[in-house]
Length: 387
View (cartoon, rainbow, N blue to C red):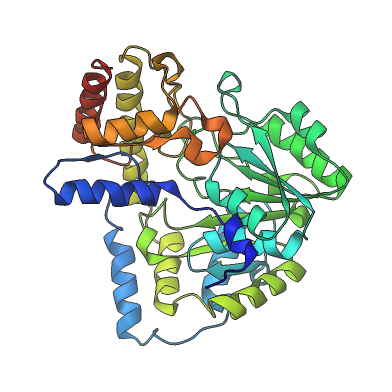
């Protein structure tokens, strides 16, 4: 079989590969502490589950509009208008099965072969994968620990060329937990407006934030027309398996993104959209409880990592990941992550799973119980003491 050349440019998410390896070890009887996967370990809140069941019983099992149901798009428009302090109408919303299609469709719709897309590195690996897949040029901007894993706006200015068609930002950020400041966003907005560049703002972790408030680049004057907001229910509402996300953008682009949806997924499941309405209009008590628990876990894991010799870890401001520095150990990140899994029974990810600038770091998810996090830290320290 002769594959299309573009398939050689398609990347993956290492988290799923490591999860599969960990499951194989578990099948052989080895106990594994799972700190690799970016998935809340909580159940979806009951009121949301009940809304989904009710929708199934009421017959929401058929095709719907490619852009999403009118009712759900209306709810999303009101939610984004309130939380981002902009005026959004339902025609600017496209609902997708998970938020990832907004990444894929957005880059596909706006970048030609040879165009340049600037993306954070270390960063979510699918950014670089999709840019390469469509034949555009992936231009990394390094997120440095000494800058609290925020992008350097002076460096960004130097990376922008006449071929730059898009800048991707992610705040709070995966894998580092870093957050862009309002001043950072202002500079990025000025660059985008002056150079006529679209911004893909991945705001999937906007509700999981520990200090201050979330700021969206879309709220700066002139930026609503230049921004694609990516958001969804997977992280905030512990709904990863429901596959429910959305994008908010200018109307003319939303029409084209919906057309890409028609040509690929057809539409998002109707009953999950009814559950999505409950997410944004129903009680938020469970979300607040989850966020409080994440904060507690964050403090436990940061303290635990910083107590291990040759490891240092900054305190993340959002999401549910830490990105500890392992450079003093003297091992490459991939080798160390493999060793911790095979010998220590702890599944973590190499920083290089998120790009070349992730070397010297691990990504550890604290979407697990405090008990398991403490056990994982004990195993990491014990395993490293034997190196």
